[in-house]
Length: 67
Image 1 (spheres, rainbow, N blue to C red):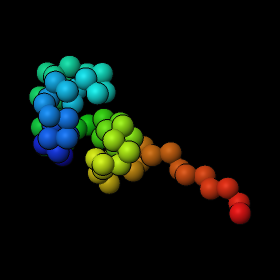
Image 2: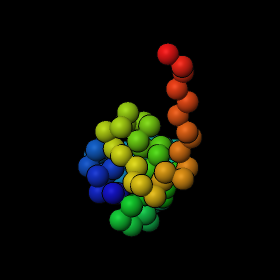
Image 3: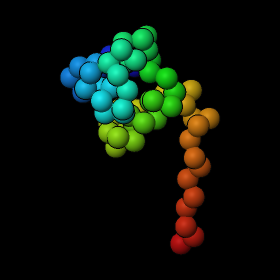
């Protein structure tokens, strides 16, 4: 949710700066950031912020090495 992102970063401006967008862009997101932005935040925060299930279609499949 957008509110969780803002809470994590402290402000709309800081949340935008973290991914290279203006505060005005963050202000327009509504309840949730766009799907690809959610994935950016998940990666930047090492999973502290989780992308929603609607983002799964953009995830790169994990390749596991044989043991």
